Image (tube, rainbow, N blue to C red; front, side, top):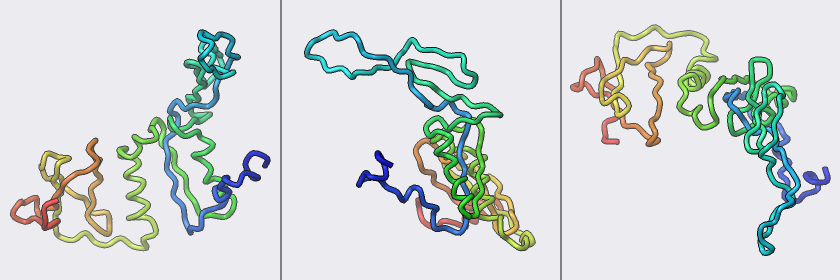
Length: 204
């Protein structure tokens, strides 16, 4: 309270449950994540004019605590099936803050993907499938009959070779991974024919 609640710059909104009806949270786990630091008192000053902090990383520190590793004074939580760790950037306690929102009554669902790093999750096929299922499939009362059509998608991600799209009960879909450039160009074809380009009708 002294260091946060009474600070005029403290954003207390982060403690409140989001004003949404349903939440779907997905994050990686069990990637070595900074959890603590081993420090020592700075006792050596090489130059009188050099300003040093009172404390410094204790690079010689070590421990045999199961599930943790030391590197240059930084303690990493490595995670296991019994004790999860964060996603390599964000600690587990922050990633799972939404569990407190669930206790407050928010309809929420949390999925963790082992071994997937904080940024790399955006290119993870499992993550894409979870988003697809959440947006396209869940909550539908009935599945529609597949139409007698065949669509495929071709683009920079496949060297412009058509790849078959699948029917999910409501529309034709294909899960793709965006490359390192952060963009992809594509065309949707009917019957995999370049004479039947369906969408888009303009370049890029």
